[in-house]
Amino acid sequence: MANRLSNKIAVITGGASGIGEGMVRRFAAEGARVIVADVDVAAGSRVATECNAQFIELDVSAEGQWQSLETTIRADYGRLDILVNNAGVVSNLNIAEVDLAAWQRLMAINLTGVMLGCRMAVNVMRDNPDPAGGSIINTASSTSYLAIPDVAYTTSKAGVVGLTKSVAVHCANEGLNIRCNSVHPGAT
Image 1 (cartoon, rainbow, N blue to C red):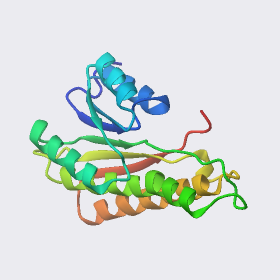
Image 2 (image 1 turned 45 degrees about the vertical axis):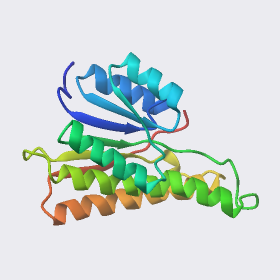
Image 3 (image 1 turned 90 degrees about the vertical axis):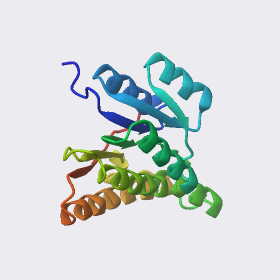
Image 4 (image 1 turned 60 degrees about the vertical axis):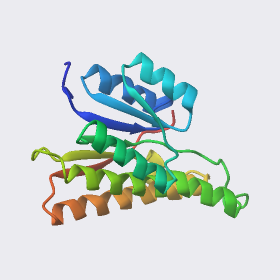
């Protein structure tokens, strides 16, 4: 099937490599107008060019950068149909090894970044010019349910599950036609 996402505006964080790059390629092949958002400028620009997408440098843990992205989306597209919160990092540190700085960095990217993205998406999607609403997709992990020794990663991905449920309930309670779901890939 082609064009299932025809003319949809989609932002994919962490779109410069891995699962995110795969999503960018598939969304573009399905007709979406994709914004690749990543801290890796070289790889993100390459993927965007190859997929006829737009690249925007985005540190998901930086609130001001999300605000800039929202301004760009509103000015350039006038709507947002899909946000994929995919950016994430691992620490490979267990509870005996993890230090506070490593913990806080990972939480800032893997959990706070997802919250900031969800907040931005809800703000834009509620103003979409038609009742189409929108879809927020948060990349959690199989470790959301089956823990691994990487304590910060496991905790952050379990947090993504709770955050996703909270956003979905908020949107339902407000009568917004905005879905919020999580996906749970295994190791890649």
